[in-house]
Image (cartoon, rainbow, N blue to C red; front, side, top):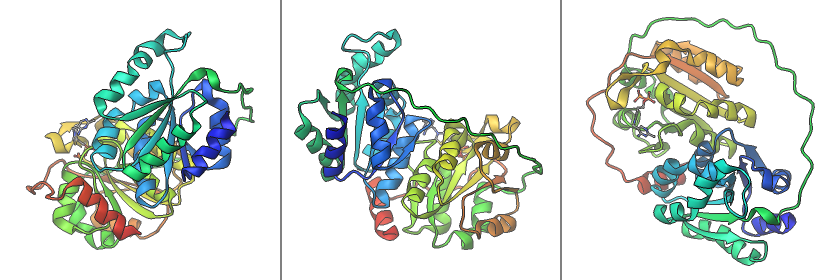
Length: 361
Ligand SMILES: Cc1ncc(C[n+]2csc(CCOP(=O)(O)OP(=O)(O)O)c2C)c(N)n1
């Protein structure tokens, strides 16, 4: 069965697998990872962002997750994939039904078809016999630019022994980071590094970061996030995995929503992903409510995730210097809370996507 599914994915043109495992389909995931470029996720939601980045840079990703994990990506699917009209086929290991033994799988699994209907996501159930329908559904997601789900019956898969591997040794790190105060607002920092950002592929965070960037330096290589809070780094990672050099303009609140993506990025071996974390210790775009970053250290978080190159500064000139190298790094920029008085971005989501894809081709 697994081999048939793999060849159907190949025929449908899939070339990148993003997965978070389910025990029922472990052989399928194992084979998918062997047969395609692949990445194991820390959280399903980030997979939606990574898939968006991969797609916009010309790849054809597919996600393989469990029904519980579908619950972890609903807003991302609506405010990113659906809103920007991007394709994404998702194989969902359908738990909670077919004599499920684990009680906690039932509430989500039993409601999954109704949930998909409510979200306007087309789906089929794969029972092992409808391989053609399976392949058409996967290919159809790309032909129609839509999210499509395939619910995988749990009782059709071949068992497989657990994987075993030696536990890697954790590297010891000699860590010193510098403190320092914040002098400038996000807008002042973006304006101060404008020349370094010109011509770069940029993913910019939801809310004022995107509005301010649009005001300072609108360019077709800017991908403005209009929703999907917490996915800026994931979208940047997807683009990087497709070979692009990317600068992500992040926020502290957004990093704290999906800190896992820092870990996924390093685990992926991503090439040239710069995360510019503008840390104003606040949810700036919603009125400067203080975030947990006020008592934490995002640079240390990046080091913990495995970033070898991290920097901290509050000075735009210094940040501009850090930006010069085209490699994977985390730049922790300390900023004062505050938003510039700039209008919302007048571009529609689909227009942002189309001109971005055209520009980075
Ligand atoms: C899932 C979700 N939760 C909450 C919001 C509302 N929201 C939009 S932007 C934002 C603040 C983002 O803060 P941060 O990442 O620190 O960036 P800043 O605006 O401070 O630059 C919030 C809470 C949202 N759009 N989506």
